Length: 487
Image (cartoon, rainbow, N blue to C red; front, side, top):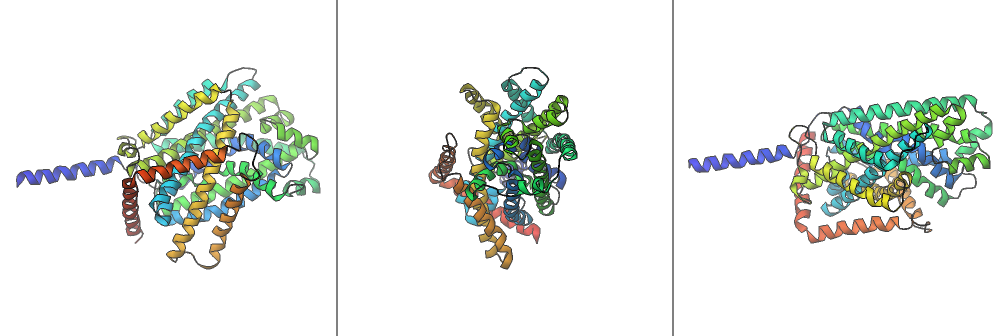
């Protein structure tokens, strides 16, 4: 009898220890710190330092219009994410949201697709760190290759993400805040010297000669700038009062950053000029903000802008690795790959094994990409596009799942359904525009990479029904506990 008692006690002890080792640290973050990860993944400074010229190469002077359209579309998508986060707090984000709304298989595939996005963004942003650093030193007449800087940065990112989550999110706030200040100074200078005629106000916000398909294609680069707005969802288990804080963090990140994008893209467009020559220079620029800083201020301030872009890219890589590690951690906790992937560090309570998997993949991927002759900017453009395509698909499935779940549970009814329905139309058309007409190489291959990744996820679920069963059990258990908390 005594032996049976001690055996039972031992089993309970092991269960408590395992549960503790698979728990993230609760009540660590404020809504501002949660918002920081969404803003950092979007990386407003890095986005404005590169994505505007990519948009101008397709849409001409209508760049601010493109960012306005993208902000409205992402705002519609955010409605579903906000509602999910009002109901549930889970580090798995769409992995959990889609799982409870459309079933464990689609939940896994949705999380699987978002995992691809976060991995692509981590690698792309590390390469972008090197590219911006190379441009920064070039403005100081110092020639340094981007690759060693990217490798060193990846190690620093690993250390920051490994440590206490408060350290990482506060670092994101500081780094992005410094870089945004540099850009706002440049914007005020451009506005002070600009000739604000009626054309200057109207032309950048009109479609001009652009067709609807061209606008939809150009919005991909704007979506790249908004990609990751949902990142705060991955901190649902670590934020104070998450069912209020996370929705506020998401909506603040979307519209504050969106307003910043519109103002800066407008300033950049009129800064280069609205004629064909100015727009041509804008579209060809590999560092539009630095070029404008050199034109309107000084070469030294252009270097400061690029340093700010470097900080922003670093914070994006850190935020992507942080969010991605939470996604992989949630899957590992349910038995994907190995349950140790779902373990947390004894001291920092960070998902250190999941993080290590993502960082090792990122480091390994950089070497062959460098080996085939790609520079940091091209790596960012290519991998970022793959990540966005996978992300748009994830947003689409999550929005459809949200409509089904909230209608079924009588949370949504009537006119509110118009908002997610418009989001589905916008996302669907954007995905279609990236497939037809077939874009030029190598962009024509990117949709097939995403499809291949999804098919791999389908194979994983087909060959591992036990994983699907564990996910289903976990989803039911978590949903019951969330409902108990709400009650």
